[in-house]
Length: 194
Image (cartoon, rainbow, N blue to C red; front, side):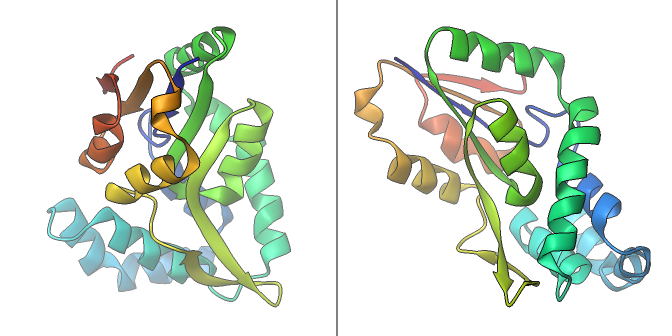
């Protein structure tokens, strides 16, 4: 049996699901104020002066801090059912099914959110490591539980979930520099292609 590790945003999907979810589920007023307040951070990110992990945390916190978890979870279920299928690359799903048909273990390892990845991965019988949102007293705190699941954290999560030597081969699929550590685990690494 082999192990297949997939990044989600930009690898399984053709675009950034995290940002689309924020626009789908966050209150319109929070989106409007976030565009203004976070503009310097967004510009810094696009200019590669700050990291994806920093901007993700800031956007998530601004969009969802102190919102009711049950409401956002319902939005995430709808997003997973209605929006994600239109973002998923057919060739990515074909590759996932190819691995599953061979009996391989398949896992998504993503900096995206458990809110919508958990139902999507459950639907496709895929294991998951991703950013988990923190809930206290029924409300989102605006924080993630643990480290942002990007870069070296992807490697750490995989190595804590699997004994890699137990697999004949490891495949990994990614599309950005945040996937480099994941790709380095693989016997067969696929960068921006299948």
